[in-house]
Image (tube, rainbow, N blue to C red; front, side):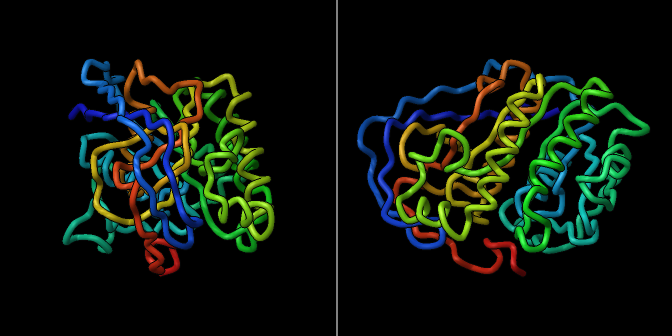
Length: 284
């Protein structure tokens, strides 16, 4: 199995000029301290479960895991929506993703029986929750309810390792969100952030080996291979890099952010123009 090398850079501050649906601009306030997990030990993984597998981030998780030799079981409302992702897929982006070691299950993440199908028949070694969708379409508590359902199934089957994708601004990271984005969090995005906060709370109380992943502004760019774990304002990050961070979280035995919430952005997050395309917003 291929060992991925996660580059983690700790940034003290990142300056941003607008919200996630506008433009980011800024500059590094100081030197970047870099630590590599070259010596980390990979878990002997056989199967990774991905919930929200057909989404823009979930599909990156599925695609990259398959390319690195893992078996993947994915749950999605509409499995046929799973495509080779734009970020990592290259010239094949947008084509159907069908591989022998991929099993896609159609279902609702809030439905106990649907979730149980993911864990039936073979051992699952790690779980990634990358749920999404408009509140008007999926409901006001889908993230929390779905995460609780997955956690219960994991406990029943003895699965320990979990990565949950939320957002910058969730939990105790509100101060890391850009000013304009904070305004959205308190108005038009208030309900989704209540759900995200409750989702994070359920994760931290799960007793599992979890990592909460809080990405900055998401793009569908090619992966950079560099992830910055930040303490300051959030910048951008390709969904492909978010996926690699999630995969490392469930595959690297001594992953340094287990039991923590990591706010991440790419090296490009210090000076960036938001990708406002329909593809980046998942509206294609």
